[in-house]
Amino acid sequence: MTTRLTKDGRKVSLLGYGAMRLPTVDGLNAAGRVGGKPIPGTSRADIDQKLLDSQVKYMLDQGVSYFDTSPAYCMGRSEAHLGRALKASGYARGAYILATKLSNFAPQQFPLDECRKMFEKSLEYLKTDYIDNYLLHSVGNGGFKMFSQRYLENGALDWCLKLRQEKRIRNLGFSFHGDPKVFEWCLGHHGEYKWDFCQIQMNYVDWRHAKEVNARNLDAKYLYERLTALKIPIVVMEPLLGGRLARYNYAIAKELVPLDPEATLAKWALRFCGTFPNVTTILSGMTRTEHIEENVVTCSPMKPCSEAELAALERAAVALLRLNTIPCNCCNYCMPCPYGLDIPAIFTFRNAVLTSKTRPTAREALRMYAKAVPEDLRRAEHCTGCGRCNPHCPQSIDIPKELASIDAWIDTLKNAEAGR
Image 1 (cartoon, one colour):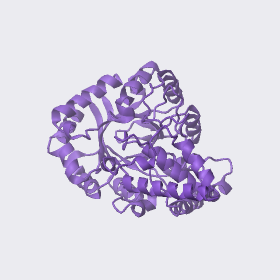
Image 2 (cartoon, one colour):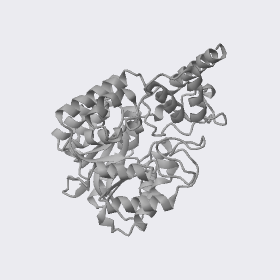
Image 3 (spheres, helix red, strand yellow):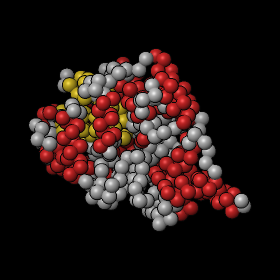
Image 4 (tube, one colour):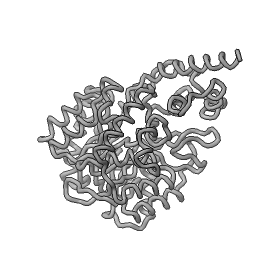
């Protein structure tokens, strides 16, 4: 396993485990749905603890040493199940780096006492008395006012500094989504807070085109260069864009397959991120054991991309963007929908149609829709436009607008099929 160095000189695996899509007992996996049930992260089925235990043990055996979770992941279940798996592995606490977050998204969680309770719960669930990497979670999502309420006005950031001084956390960082003003504020105050790391969304699409997808975004290239200039190590999230860069996509494949016919699309995405030396760890939300095994091989050791390969990845990014897919990463922050819609599944279906090698007929597209979102679940036509999902989307997707567009498109397909 390729390793990099943290700011305090610890060796850390280049591949990290993101515990936001834990396996469940009903057989769900990161590649899609089984029997019309919700995607991982939204399923209310029990976490498959036995499978998770074996996966975590395997990763530790293979040299994976970074495990990332949050009080918000898997509807609040991630920390406890990951803690059990790490404990069951038999590895000493010092053998891995454990990351979790101050995920105080709701106003009732803003008060400092509530932040303290969240931290203590994290320690309890993770079966530890310290956290290696503690993050302010998704700063910028909601704008500067929200950032100030969550971390500044309530004294939470100053309290985190005290936790670091007391060694209850070893490193302090933040994950960034959204408002550039928040990112610049954090870097502008680096001298005061001395950030130990920063977690950013980075992949070969967002490298140069994040701002193109959404004007509010900052390109990953800019984020990388600003952090590197300040010698702040980087943890990468969304290297596969929620799986969009791992699933078959003809526009991408025609650029990359000729370079290495045996390489998966996921391998290309991970290699891109690993090419940059200030990236210490690349997080992957791996649910299926075969995906863990594949990613371990990719990073053991990591082969950096050549200039020619980087150029091909840029062409692939441009080709993907021309398809006008919905930039949904299946993070599930929009879920659960109060009206029962499976928003990520609906968006995944739409993107699958757009990225297929040949455009499906109306009948084929309707069959794909029936398989992706069965009739016993609520489809796009049930969206009321309440907008409760929008503030939670790190990608700033206008979710009701996209759902209305999909609903109108489905009606068009039904009319075309009826007129055959």
